[in-house]
Length: 93
Image 1 (cartoon, rainbow, N blue to C red):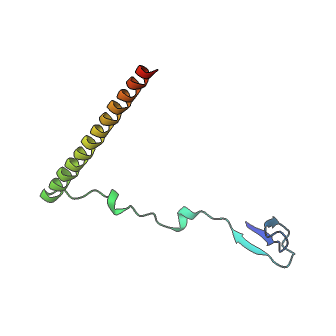
Image 2 (cartoon, rainbow, N blue to C red):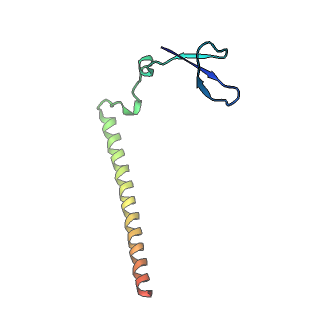
């Protein structure tokens, strides 16, 4: 079912108006999903299992493990710094 709108030159906004006015823009509401095909991203598609993909997965896990260890170390340093700062604040007060 078509819906008509008039672009008002005074306020520059859209107002519902009857179709008999001069400046009319008419369009139909339709489903966007039916008009286009959604294709999966390449990164989400599963790889074929072979030796290269096995090595790639091992490498990715090793990199993730290293990053996790670095994060844990920095959290421990921050925690110990925070605890030592709060202990020294308690001593001075």
